[in-house]
Image (cartoon, rainbow, N blue to C red; front, side, top):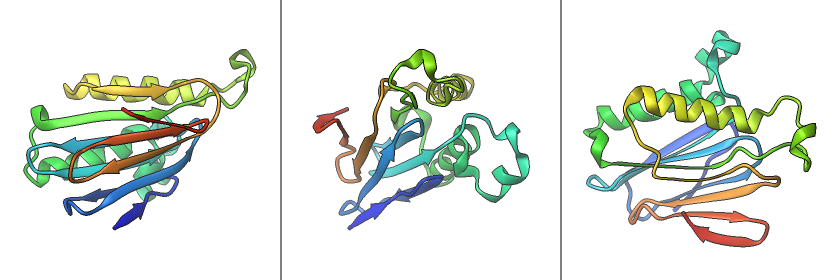
Length: 160
Protein backbone atom coordinates (compact mmCIF):
# COMPACT_ATOMS: atom_id res chain seq x y z
CA UNK A 1 0.00 0.00 0.00
CA UNK A 2 1.22 3.52 -0.75
CA UNK A 3 1.23 5.93 2.19
CA UNK A 4 1.55 9.64 1.48
CA UNK A 5 3.54 11.70 3.95
CA UNK A 6 2.23 15.26 4.02
CA UNK A 7 4.05 18.45 4.89
CA UNK A 8 5.14 18.49 8.55
CA UNK A 9 4.29 14.80 8.80
CA UNK A 10 5.99 11.45 9.25
CA UNK A 11 5.09 7.83 8.67
CA UNK A 12 6.78 4.62 9.79
CA UNK A 13 6.06 1.14 8.49
CA UNK A 14 7.27 -2.42 8.97
CA UNK A 15 4.89 -3.82 6.33
CA UNK A 16 7.14 -4.94 3.46
CA UNK A 17 4.34 -4.29 0.96
CA UNK A 18 4.23 -0.59 1.88
CA UNK A 19 5.73 2.34 0.01
CA UNK A 20 6.15 5.75 1.66
CA UNK A 21 6.04 8.84 -0.55
CA UNK A 22 6.19 12.59 -0.10
CA UNK A 23 5.75 15.29 -2.71
CA UNK A 24 6.78 18.88 -3.33
CA UNK A 25 9.96 19.03 -1.28
CA UNK A 26 11.26 22.52 -1.91
CA UNK A 27 13.15 23.99 1.03
CA UNK A 28 11.64 21.21 3.17
CA UNK A 29 13.59 18.01 3.80
CA UNK A 30 12.43 14.48 3.13
CA UNK A 31 14.43 12.40 5.61
CA UNK A 32 14.33 8.63 5.30
CA UNK A 33 15.41 6.14 7.95
CA UNK A 34 15.63 2.46 7.08
CA UNK A 35 16.55 -0.43 9.38
CA UNK A 36 17.88 -3.09 7.03
CA UNK A 37 17.76 -5.85 9.67
CA UNK A 38 14.17 -5.25 10.79
CA UNK A 39 12.90 -4.10 7.36
CA UNK A 40 11.41 -0.99 8.94
CA UNK A 41 11.16 2.35 7.15
CA UNK A 42 10.33 5.91 8.13
CA UNK A 43 9.89 9.11 6.16
CA UNK A 44 9.80 12.60 7.69
CA UNK A 45 8.76 15.72 5.72
CA UNK A 46 9.97 18.66 7.85
CA UNK A 47 9.76 22.37 7.04
CA UNK A 48 11.93 24.37 9.44
CA UNK A 49 15.36 23.84 11.02
CA UNK A 50 14.98 24.42 14.74
CA UNK A 51 12.12 23.76 17.15
CA UNK A 52 13.44 26.47 19.48
CA UNK A 53 11.74 28.95 17.11
CA UNK A 54 8.38 27.99 18.66
CA UNK A 55 8.38 25.33 21.38
CA UNK A 56 4.57 25.27 21.59
CA UNK A 57 4.21 24.54 17.87
CA UNK A 58 6.92 21.88 18.12
CA UNK A 59 5.08 20.23 21.01
CA UNK A 60 1.88 20.13 18.96
CA UNK A 61 3.58 18.94 15.76
CA UNK A 62 7.21 17.89 16.14
CA UNK A 63 7.38 16.95 12.43
CA UNK A 64 7.28 20.63 11.54
CA UNK A 65 10.94 20.97 12.55
CA UNK A 66 14.09 19.05 11.60
CA UNK A 67 15.34 18.48 15.15
CA UNK A 68 12.09 17.55 16.90
CA UNK A 69 10.87 15.50 13.92
CA UNK A 70 14.08 13.50 13.81
CA UNK A 71 13.88 12.91 17.55
CA UNK A 72 10.37 11.46 17.25
CA UNK A 73 11.33 9.37 14.22
CA UNK A 74 14.53 7.94 15.70
CA UNK A 75 13.03 7.38 19.17
CA UNK A 76 10.33 5.26 17.52
CA UNK A 77 12.96 3.16 15.75
CA UNK A 78 14.96 2.64 18.95
CA UNK A 79 11.84 1.74 20.97
CA UNK A 80 11.07 -0.92 18.38
CA UNK A 81 14.49 -2.60 18.54
CA UNK A 82 16.59 -0.72 16.01
CA UNK A 83 20.29 -0.17 16.62
CA UNK A 84 22.27 2.76 15.29
CA UNK A 85 24.55 0.65 13.11
CA UNK A 86 21.54 -0.90 11.31
CA UNK A 87 20.06 2.43 10.24
CA UNK A 88 20.45 3.91 6.77
CA UNK A 89 19.66 7.63 6.74
CA UNK A 90 19.23 9.61 3.52
CA UNK A 91 17.73 13.00 2.70
CA UNK A 92 16.44 15.00 -0.24
CA UNK A 93 15.10 18.54 -0.60
CA UNK A 94 16.55 21.65 0.97
CA UNK A 95 16.38 23.62 -2.23
CA UNK A 96 16.47 27.38 -2.53
CA UNK A 97 13.27 29.37 -2.79
CA UNK A 98 14.93 31.53 -5.47
CA UNK A 99 16.53 30.43 -8.71
CA UNK A 100 19.42 32.76 -7.88
CA UNK A 101 20.56 31.47 -4.49
CA UNK A 102 21.97 34.90 -3.56
CA UNK A 103 18.40 36.26 -3.59
CA UNK A 104 17.21 33.62 -1.11
CA UNK A 105 17.33 35.80 2.01
CA UNK A 106 16.19 33.23 4.60
CA UNK A 107 18.04 30.23 3.09
CA UNK A 108 15.62 27.83 4.80
CA UNK A 109 16.64 24.87 2.63
CA UNK A 110 20.31 25.33 3.46
CA UNK A 111 19.55 25.89 7.16
CA UNK A 112 17.39 22.74 7.22
CA UNK A 113 20.26 20.66 5.86
CA UNK A 114 22.76 22.18 8.32
CA UNK A 115 20.34 21.43 11.18
CA UNK A 116 19.98 17.82 9.99
CA UNK A 117 23.74 17.29 9.80
CA UNK A 118 24.25 18.81 13.26
CA UNK A 119 21.52 16.64 14.78
CA UNK A 120 22.95 13.47 13.23
CA UNK A 121 26.48 14.39 14.31
CA UNK A 122 25.35 14.97 17.89
CA UNK A 123 23.44 11.65 17.84
CA UNK A 124 26.43 9.73 16.49
CA UNK A 125 24.66 8.86 13.25
CA UNK A 126 25.90 8.99 9.68
CA UNK A 127 24.12 10.32 6.62
CA UNK A 128 24.47 7.71 3.87
CA UNK A 129 23.35 9.84 0.91
CA UNK A 130 21.75 13.17 0.08
CA UNK A 131 20.26 15.09 -2.81
CA UNK A 132 19.86 18.64 -1.52
CA UNK A 133 20.13 22.22 -2.70
CA UNK A 134 19.59 23.70 -6.10
CA UNK A 135 16.26 25.07 -7.19
CA UNK A 136 13.00 23.17 -7.70
CA UNK A 137 11.00 20.51 -5.97
CA UNK A 138 11.58 16.83 -5.39
CA UNK A 139 9.44 13.77 -4.73
CA UNK A 140 10.80 11.02 -2.47
CA UNK A 141 9.70 7.39 -2.45
CA UNK A 142 10.88 4.78 0.08
CA UNK A 143 10.19 1.04 -0.35
CA UNK A 144 9.84 -0.78 2.97
CA UNK A 145 10.86 -4.20 1.63
CA UNK A 146 14.16 -3.14 0.07
CA UNK A 147 14.91 0.25 1.62
CA UNK A 148 15.26 1.65 -1.89
CA UNK A 149 14.89 5.44 -1.95
CA UNK A 150 13.97 7.13 -5.22
CA UNK A 151 14.16 10.87 -5.82
CA UNK A 152 12.31 12.51 -8.69
CA UNK A 153 13.45 15.98 -9.66
CA UNK A 154 12.95 17.94 -12.88
CA UNK A 155 11.58 14.85 -14.61
CA UNK A 156 14.55 12.66 -13.66
CA UNK A 157 14.22 9.67 -11.34
CA UNK A 158 17.27 8.45 -9.50
CA UNK A 159 18.10 5.89 -6.83
CA UNK A 160 19.70 7.52 -3.82
